[in-house]
Image (cartoon, rainbow over the protein chains, first blue to last red):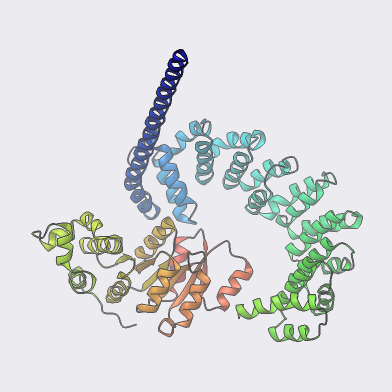
Length: 354
Length: 217
């Protein structure tokens, strides 16, 4: 019993010492991290107090000289400088570029591009784009082509676009077909930054080379091509398409590019049995529809699928010639309670807007 | 708009002194709070850092007043909170420059807007959210222009637009919306609801000034 007791006591003692040591280590570590954070924040604040007025003044009047930028201050500089660049347009951005070059940021950029920290690398890429640093074009292109991280690849794409959008289109658009993991909204954001004429041929190329499974995803990017290319490609696809997803994607492009010349294509699919296609028809008609499409949209209001009714009601409300009084009149002529509900929502929204 | 033309910086100093004494706070109370009752008024005004202790409500504005007094006081920028609003617009009305109320919650955007407009000769007043702006609109004299960010905490830019348009005193004030990547529908909506113009973010300071100048010259 006595032996048991002493073993237990020894065990508890060691355990207590262990727990106390661990607590002490955690406490010291927490304190260290906290102090490091505070010191970093203080350093950043001091840096901003010194450099923000220089940058702000430099936006309007170029300084004759700027303070020496230490390598340890580079990241602080880039955070501050990029936050200004992202919020501005026009000549002031050029002046900020001059301030950055005076601080020799361009010379330090290449090193930061290969930093182990992804954050620093992204910061360097973004800076290269704003600075239009052609000297790092090769590195940025390499990130686009080889990075497995979509954020890194698409940040590099944006910088390439800022440096030379036409050449950037040639680098990244052919890769859209391959990189399914690139988030569609971000890809769309990048395509929006490229001029339609520069993007058209490459978009047409990836769509013509795409497999049937890939087509619906890629067709939707056609809205960033020139209207002529988009309509030409979509008409060609619709002529031979029997896949509902491909047809819906084509009709969504027709609705988006808003050419008015392809109204006959939208109307042609109004009787399609699949609701996904009718939704796209309603969407397209909301922008391009004429007086003769009102009957078609009223018919959609009675569809069994909620999405078709909802989109048709909004399409009716969006027709440029449709007044609130006319919508009320249309509602009075309806008998289907679902159709009335759908139209009532739009009428109320329109009434609130007025 | 009949604004009193200030002849010199001294005029502004007098106005500020009067406002400090009469409108904003009791100087004796400040001294007591600071525990420095024997200090001169001049010392208290110059040491803006001590005024931090007075409390959030007045410190920012106090600093601005002091800055305005020490520096070029012709263009007064007032960062406002709470009770300072009405007095600040009164002060702005004493200035000869056209006045703008900026309603913007992003601190960096606010700083850039203030800088661009002050450089162009506007007197600038800032509200950090829709509630603060509503308070100014309901209680203060109107400014020449209101520049409203569409995305605001508490009260959205569009709601604020309606508040301005519903207030008769502010009926002649031009409202310019600041919008991030606006859709055609949004632009039509804000223009139909009484905005005079809209400016897209990111913004070009020169374009901003040129657009706002149309409403004051």
